[in-house]
Length: 248
Image (cartoon, rainbow, N blue to C red; front, side, top):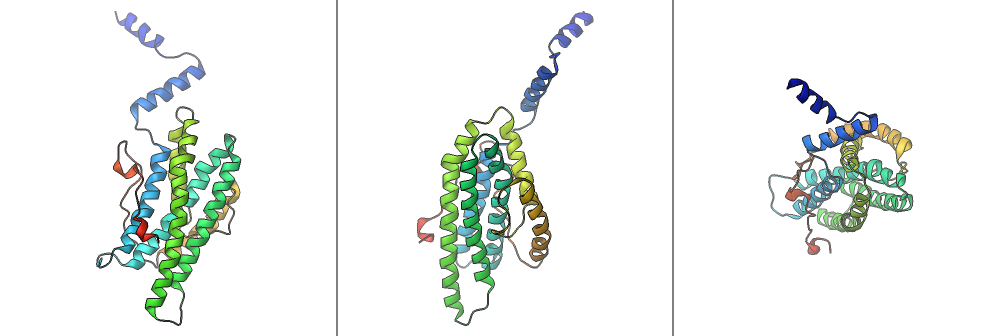
């Protein structure tokens, strides 16, 4: 009887190398929760939108506007970089280089606006604080409108079209790369550095990140509402809405 069971078990395991690889991939999918690129990207989008909403709340004594602003700028910078080094790089490998390049150009514009916002918040000006705040709010609204337009395009068109073309298991690996890229991304906008992806961009990040970390140590930040990795069915992965009145 034991010989029969042993023989049956051995027959259930693929014998060729290719078949064993596929068998292992299916076993991994069955055993471990799979990451989803769309969900991880949307968590970033939602955190940025949530920070923007929090900034506009008046009378919040627990979180200063400066700390929220610092966190908002940091999260935009990290998200832009992580997406370029993962999602956009992958798009180029499946014949979507034109779309990836256009998305990179939009990211560069986003970073330019958020860098201007950071400078606007820190510069010394010779007029009343109220006037300075109004000017900052104008730049903030413009930067956020640009980000939301880009994020909406990704959520509704770019990402769904990309995920339809991903082979089994590739969605999980792409999401892993996105999360890994978040960890190595600079924490301030650097629109003038390479945005072509791959080695040049990674090297530029390696040079920028230590300086950003040094600056981070002198600034206040707030906690994020949504955490990576996303869980299936998590409400955090439903695109968050920003009140249109806060963007006018």
